[in-house]
Structures are given as structure tokens and as C-alpha cells.
Image (cartoon, rainbow, N blue to C red; front, side, top):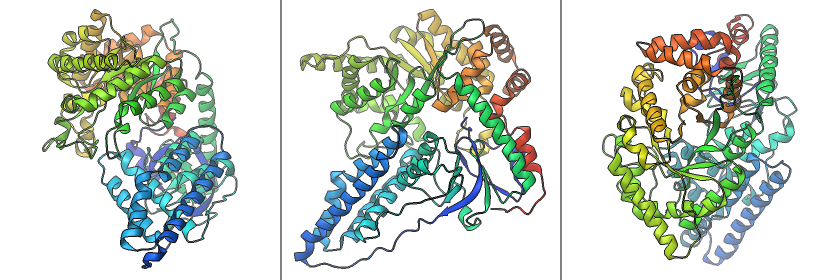
Length: 618
């Protein structure tokens, strides 16, 4: 399963001089010879053209776009349906962007420069804008622009398509790979992928997960220390790469791979079965999603719908907010792909680190996380908010849709938001536009004030969803991104657990469902505690679902409840963690190890601790 990204304290020492760390991007273990991919940028000519040559130069540019479209289409046609095809389709849409064509052709016409130079200048502007975005997903989209620009330039220069052709079982190592590169690897049957740049939300990482190729990204300097045919081990579970292991190490890694594959087969076999305890208590497991590509992953891993669809990404990387019609079409498409399961669309959570350039004055002062963001921003940008609600209400005619409001702090704010719903319905009725009337509306409980006032909020809504990422952060006064205070991040802190119980009790009294959609839901260490506290719906990243489901199906609710009562009675978060480890770890050691929650298992430790052989420090 997908690793959580945290390095076990003892693992970094055991890696020693033969291995390096990156970001676990796609789970699994790959062992094979290295295949280096050289994707250096090509030299771009820069020269002036005559006014009479503008038409021909624009024609050259359009012909290069057409050739690039055809090359992507040829790759897409060789692939099965899935996320990888959707990513290539998104790249084709980028090529058809009228702003791109207008800006490149405008530079050719106004500056009298060659098409190659105009293309690279425009692409560079877009790349810089994306790289400066606060949100990681949009920073990583800058590489997509670079890859597309590179291929268009190759076609302009007559270099054509630059395909890679690794042998079966090879470990592909590159500074970066384009989505088209990664898609080609589906046919090559490679053993793993390692790149120097990228993150878990980069398209290469998403496609590697979709194609089930072990991958580690963000391994700096690797290409300088590896040669083609060097033996390489890729641990996509814990984000580890070992270069030139000796035969004893290889044997240990092969045994670790066999055990991981066997575990993966076991838990995935249950993906279509219900998450029901041994004593008959059903737990609904749903997926979190931010990208369309993740919807297919949710279906594959057995999600019972989407418990959190982050709509803010529909608003970003564009010059104007999406229209009502765009919201309608987007939500309708998602509902159809998840049918018959429900999808919970969270209204836009812009602000703080998620910025849309067309939204004014959203800096939020010295602490933007506590400024004008989320629902506060939506209430200020009322027309933008109404358009989204109208589109979602129309889409709700096509499937079970729920709407969730983020970052609610109190009753007055919630009442103001609900008034927007009434206005949206009135406008739709006035326009004679068909829409659903009784769409469930809920709120995210992610601010301590909302958790403590949950009994006042519950009568106004149809459901609660607890967002533990922010709730823990604000309760313990720590920045999740600040490593200096990372040791204070305690999901089982008594204050956090007390708020979970308060919210659950308020929901029970009001007769409304309550779910949990933070990272806690995906962590197999906490499954017993959350279910034992009475939470019957958990929403997580799709790849975590099979492990959590397998734990639920092997457990009884009574034992979960007993542990939860002990944990709640603990005097500190550290004591609570020790209780969980004592009870859960012996029973579900494999789930914690392969889920990335509990460090390396004994096979990994022995493989990495062995200090024989030459090895290479990268």
C-alpha cells in the first residue's frame, strides 16, 4: 500500500552508504538493471523573421501542435482505459488551449521572432506562474508544461518523437519523465521508476500508481551516481533506492518483494467485499479525491463512493472562475463514474496555500491559514459561490450528491451559507432550470470552535465530516509543515480524542451521520480507535482502503470499543500511542509495515542493515 511518507527513525541510519531516500510515489518493490533516460532540454534557436514570413511561421507552429496531438493520441490508443489515458487526454486539452495559441502566435506576429523562441517564452511564463503557486499540485503541473513545450519544440525542429525503449524488468531512472514517457512504460513491463524531481501528486507518480509500477520520486542527484545496467532496488513503499546491492542483499530484497506481493494479493482480493466486522458492524469506506484521475483509483480499490471531493482545484490555474455550467458538467461526470455510490463535493477551499489569481485580497495577513479562506472567502465572493451551488444542485439530478461546507466556525456563519443555498435554488427556479431540491448539506468539523459547538450546529445540517488534519493542527497549535514542531503532532492527544467524542455525540443526538476524512482515517494504526469511538464512515486516499478494510473484516467491534475506551482514558498522546501499538501491532504487523505506518519490517531491516558489498552512496 502507499507509504505515508515519514521515514522511520531507525531506517535512515540503516540505509548507510548504499541507499538514498526519496518520496514513496507508487507502492511495490522493483529489482533490476538501471536504464537511464536523458531528457536534457534541446537548444532553442532565436532569430528574427521578416513580416512577410509571419504567416508561414504561424503555420509551422500549428503543424507542430498537430503533430504533437497525433503523437499523444498514438500513445493513448495503445493503452487500456484508465487514469493514464485521462492524463494524456488532459495534455491534449492543454495543447488546444486557445490562450496558448493566442500568446505564441501573438509573439510571432508582434515581436517578429521564430516559432521555437515564441513557444519557449510563453511556456516559460506559464511554468514560472505554476512553480510559484503555493499549492503542491499546481507546482507539479509546471513539469507538464515543460514536457509539452519540449515535444512541440522537437516537432518544430524536425527531431520528432523521442521515445524510450527500456528492456523488460529494467529500473527506469531519469531526472524527470513526461506523462507520455510513463504511459509508454506500460507496454515495456519495467520493474520500477525513479526520478530526481516530482512529488506524490505529479502526473508521473499518478500514472505509475495507475500502472502499478513501483516508483520513488524526488531522489536528488541520482542520475550522476548510476550507470545503465547497474543493479538497482526501488522500494516504493518506504521511498528507498539502493544502488549496486551485493548478491546477499538482492536475495533479501527479493524475499521482501515476495512477501509484499503476497500481502497485496490477499488484501486486494477483498476489495469488493463489505468492510464488516466479525460481529456484524459495517464500516463505510470512501475515498478522498482532488483530481479526476483519483476517481478511477477509488473504484478499483473498492471505495463506497467519495467522502471528500476537493472542488477548489476546478478553480485554480485559470484566468476566471468556472461557470455554473462548468460546475454542472464536472460534477455530473464524477457522479456517473462513481454510480451508484454517493459523492460528497466540498465547496471551494481557496485561500491560505490555495490561490486563484482572479480572487482579490486573499493574502490573509501574516497567517493566511487563519485569514480569509474557505467558507469565509465564499461568503465574500458570493456570486462565485452561488454559481458553484447552482451547478451542484443541477448535477444532483444525475446521482447521489452531497454538498459539504469547509472551515465552519459557528452558527451565524453556517446560517449565512445556508441562505446562499436558498438564493441559488430561487434563481434556478426563476430560470426554469431543473435541479434537485433536497440535496444533503453538511459541514466539515475542522476548527475546535465548531467541534465544541457541534450540538448547536447539528440541527442545521444533514451530516458532519471531521477533518482531522486541521483539527489536530489548530487544537495543538502546531504547523503540520514545520519539522521543528512535528514531534508535537499527536492524533491521539486527549484533547483531540475528546473533540471526536463531542462531535460524535452531538451527531448521534441530532440523528445525523458523522464521518472522518483526515489522514487519521488512512493510517492502519488508528482503525480500531476510530471505529471503537463509534465512527462508522471513514474517507481516505483510495490506495489505503484495502488495508483498512482487511483490518475491519478481521476484527470484532467489541475489541475495537475496548481499546478505544482505554485510549480515551490515557493521560497523554504518547501513552495512548503505546496502548495502540501494544494491542494492534502484534495482530496486524503486516498491515502496519506494508501500509507504511510502522517502519520497515524485519526483511527490509535485514536487507538494509547488512553492511557487506561495495554499495554506493547517492
